[in-house]
Length: 408
Figure 1 (cartoon, rainbow, N blue to C red):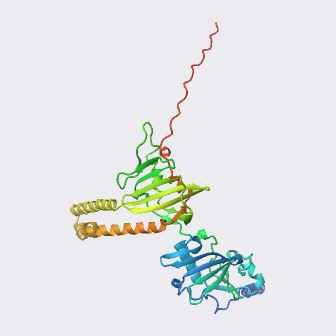
Figure 2 (figure 1 turned 90 degrees about the vertical axis):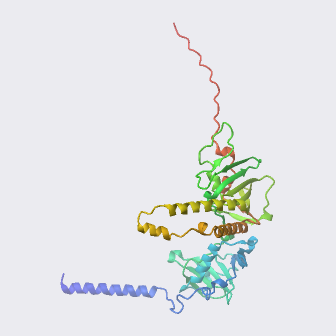
Figure 3 (figure 1 turned 180 degrees about the vertical axis):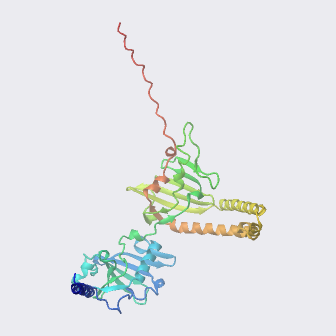
């Protein structure tokens, strides 16, 4: 190829690249630099702790639910002031506070519905209007569609403004009030459980327990004569109920009282926390109410055991002969555990922690009836027979087979 021809081809390629780049630049969204990166909700980031309420309004101008800050926490007004899931609320408020404008969108009301930012007074509106209380300027923001296919961001429009925007992040709202309810009820590790007593609706009870902390398995008590436990760990599942215990739903106890026939569950921890559950089924749902208390005698006995062990362990370390000077220096500098240096203070701290735990559980339980996941309810209502090997069915005595006559 001649040099002149090569130069012509290179020049044409460069021109094509320049034209393509210019076309891309011209088709890119035009965003005013002064507007770009401005917060969607002015002042929210600086005054996040001043927010006192959030009202979510859907199609037909219907209030979906209202979250309101009370003296002892956030509640859902339409759920008889049931507590809000604070993790979910914080996450959403932070997303709103950090959301910034990405680009200007339509200001033509005819195109609002395409973005989901049409006025929620319309019965066919798909967006949600959020009304934020507590800021210097009350804010009403319509949250539209998430622009996932377009590279992310959410379409928004301030209520009353013609201009709509694409904002950074996914700001879409969970419209089901149940998604905002506090679901976590308790989280007591199975290793803390010393005993479980279950009573069925017919009044029959059975018990499983551990002799001491650290035992691997709950042992079934009073196994009937001639029966065997199905396995060494058969009862362990009933001791896991309070671990990561969550509710599917909640309602005031006065509006969902237990029926006449109920099952009961009684849980006791080694450190004295006692939880009683009343359970029943209705309309294919599994219900429960809980009560909690602290057995001070059991709590102090557990602290006694822990302090004796702590002193024994410390004395053993102190009495051990170090291998070298470095080990001797480390041994001499090892601080005494509080259980050894100040047993009274150690006891008080442990009792304070237990009382705080019981107070938190009481706040979660009192005055409410909960709908539980089926697998939790199942473990709360197991019977003694569920723990045992099946009874062997006796086979009927077989009749001797008739002898076939021998042909002569």
